[in-house]
Image (tube, rainbow, N blue to C red; front, side, top):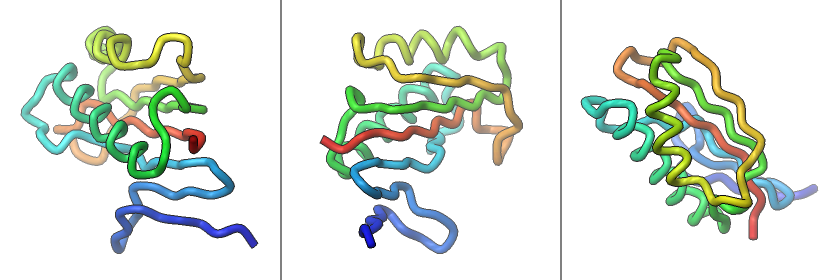
Length: 117
């Protein structure tokens, strides 16, 4: 049986699970919820960069991204930060939906699947 590796495991969830060379990240949200959509998106993407690095990957290896916005009015602001961050030529399949998030202060949550290097 193939091993499953987990990173940042706590009682409720792990930030990362790795199986058969595929990395699954839990949905990531901003720690500083006083930031606007651009600030929260930038913070979340920086966290994703850090977690992918810990798991042996990077944003050029994204297989799928799911983005949850608390309000679709924030779509343009989120995309502005996303477009500056995403590796051109390596843009992943992506879905963006409006959803009520775990707390009203969260404006964006991003969940990714990536391949290991």
